[in-house]
Length: 463
Image (cartoon, rainbow, N blue to C red; front, side, top):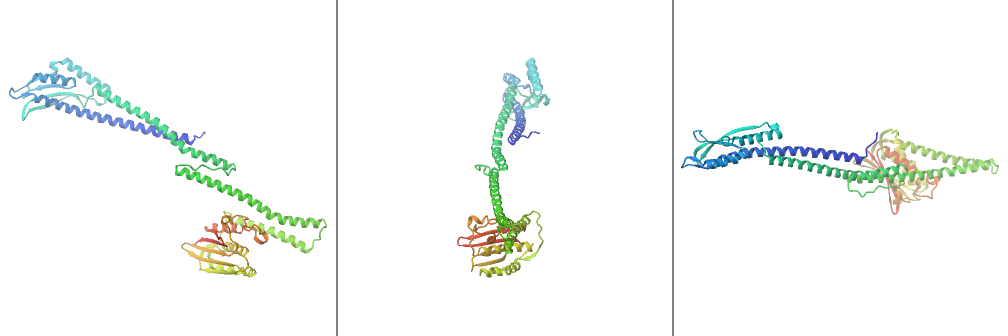
């Protein structure tokens, strides 16, 4: 099934919402306006009938005790053309003037015209002519009765029908224009939303193909798309860094393996060619090189186990202070060889941890401190509690670590002192193992170093 593009889907959604909204607005506004206009017409008819009655009453001659029939006739014919049929009586209900008696043909023509027009245009109202009586007064004195017949509940003349039709037409035209404008704006908004996403898609496609140099433009106004672009760029940067580390690790691993293998191969080849005798010293040298290989393999296995998602931690209550003190004692010979003073400070800090693996972390940190601290140097270990975490700090007075290298010391095979070999500096994966173990305990480990030398490794574990 063919998938719709997001831009198309959003445009269709915006268009549907616009059409539906404009349709509802047009229907309800048209209905409301029509109802309001009908109420206005109905009220106008009632007021006009009352005005006619008041006008005729005002022309009553009190001295003569009669109406001005000429005025009544004029008013009656005017009212007839407006759809009002008049009958005037005196106080004794004697008929004084009747529009139907005066011009019956015209009355029926007007009445039939109104009825036909209303039945044709608005059959739902089912109206008819109804007669209403008005007691006429001249001052406080009754002077007669006026009967006015007109179509109820209301009726519209031709001009009013034309007005309503024009109004409804305008509403639909405005609705149509609104739909077109809304569709255009919807397309524009959809394009504005999807264009950055399209850029992200192109970038991620190139990243998936191995081009980690690609970056997404971040000159975006919307916060979400800016954060998405920034996240993609961050991911590309990390992947590029990981690719570099992978290649660097391959080179480092090849270097670590090449030297012992080359030495062993050279010795064995010369022994086979009878160039040198397989003396115990030479065999021991081969054995030492094989031990280096075995040690490297063991280190790699430990790193793999530490970084494994399925790492099993045998957690128990561990006092970091007591554990650090015990491990410090095991380094006494190393301290004495370089005349290094080592001290433990702080307090007991109990954590729920795997004692053997946390001990391995402390051992690795102390081992590095000894390797990179010159003779007559100093190493200190601090254990303390801080709110909901235990903190272990291992600090030395060694060669220090540059600011640029501090973020890389936890990488595999990385050594800050490039001149050191595996015999003097190890394989460079001890800190990688330590970081993996600490993270498995949901803790953190970081490195700090001053400009004048010395390094500080801080481990934080949840209590």
